[in-house]
Image (cartoon, rainbow, N blue to C red; front, top):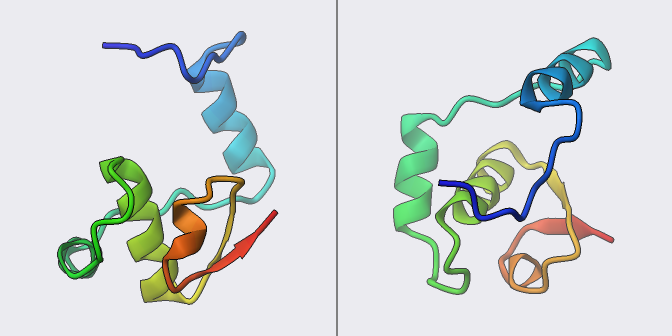
Length: 79
């Protein structure tokens, strides 16, 4: 099911290729991330955003976002 929030005019495969070509990493979801998600305060309803928060916490990464709910978590955000 597609909610229409993200549109990839050249296709998702092209986006993934560009990500890899430009040296970005696509992070796997680890068992530690799953444990971290279960320990997060329920601020954000979107489960994928909660995974992103857990990965940032587990790896000490910053999140580039304008999502106000993500910035309520104890992670570094930029925007």
